[in-house]
Image: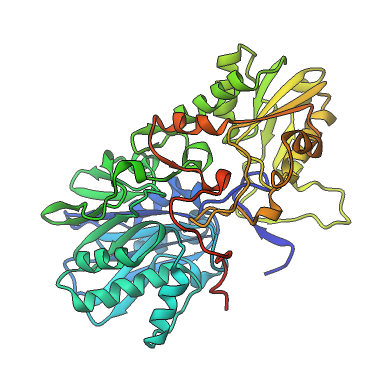
Length: 482
């Protein structure tokens, strides 16, 4: 790949990335499901824009026959009508990916399809295992040969190995779950069953839907809405669900007490679509609450509150509602900047940020602006956007952030980088403010985080360094690179 080509998520640069989105369906009437999976992936595209794939099987046909197709790019770049029509089957899984571990290559695209002595497995995984290296070495010493550099293949192999020793695929998944440490939402397709599993801490979301005589598993409820399915319920942290012709069977033997749950707070702040509900909590309402909390804890006199598209918009509205300061639109976003973006060369005067965002001079000129964004990671983009507002004539720029300062890396499927790369590391809020060129800066108070989830337990590791489980001694991301 050309070194000037970089994979991005359609947002301004220096944003966090989520590893991926998963979607599965079993049509009990025997209808083909590939097109439904495609539209489900389309709804989950915000969770990953590097690669995507679909794998389907016919539960009435011969065991072991799986049709699959995957590639690099967005769903509408990888699939077309002809491709979808060639994928025949009434049970299937789909996946959209952004890599936080493992290279961005077609080989690492999912779903993974495994042919083994008991038949086939199709697997889609969202998350990151912190003990993947140990699990991989265990398999390699047993003679396993890996085709990818992702921990999802480690999961698939362990399920397949357990299946040889067990009476059912769900028992094999359960045994594999007992070995896995870290974050995962899984959808597993066997020849006659669709299985969903969520790690005991509940880092990553997974929900169940139904449309007519079809059952669906998906990362977010917005995907259910898109395909015309009704929301049934969330898969609970630690729960394993098995969908067969007889219905849904639940196994909660690995569930932890609620107080040990550790949902990723960034599902609510940034990753999930605002029209989704996760574990019964509205993502949009969470962002409104974050904005209201910022207005209470970090007030400032100003003329206009604006959000950095897209995830900053709802928090900005919340700040406006609480403070009484008018809410406005200060940025125009170029919606056609896709997954692959050609970074301007250093010799060019073109700003990569301005290619994606531009300020409305008529809106901000002469005004004191409160600019709301969901996070500051390395700080490069925040500084450029502050300057953009000043260049457009803003009299003052006050930045408010709907999350606390990042001080620690994440090992659970979010690409918070090493501490030394984080702008907040070893800097005070005043020093960060000076670095990005704002007139003032305020972060969401860490004690406010649980308010966003209506009291549900969350992970605060990237803010506090205290993780729900013992983290690796070193950064394990990329250890499988070939």
